[in-house]
Figure 1 (tube, rainbow, N blue to C red):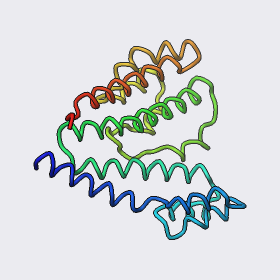
Figure 2: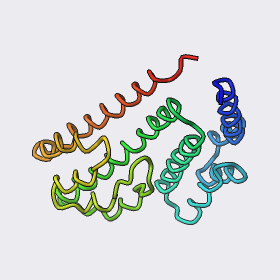
Figure 3: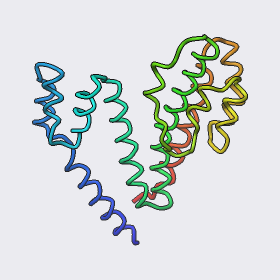
Length: 201
């Protein structure tokens, strides 16, 4: 496919996605809704109708937020199927944001359970278990008995090396700050590298 043809194809796909977004009138109505229930009712008949259904059945806003996050990931994964080379690398870099966030959440729960001795059962239902870019075993990480065991489950991902370098030190320091900062560095490095590789046209 030529560059022009590829651009036209992507443009058509994006226009189709944009047509499903909430109109400015709908957004205004949502922002002015008198109550949460009224706002969720306005989502019926839209691309976000499932969010209203989830809240009606669970009353759990965090579950609604999880569904929105999954929709964002699925949209990028669907776009990724149609792309090759530099453009695919760029979408992978965007997906890495969600993968990085997933890994942070997994290790925060592991840290709370293993280091702080807290009960994390309430929070595990809000994890993304589905594959994003890598097959990271969520349950395996949060139930690991040691930093080394948890990090070993990051094999084949860009997070393995910073885990080996920073996790134990973070645990000794009583904070995951160093570990999470290193994960952020990886994400932004991969993103800027992918941007640099995009065709200038």
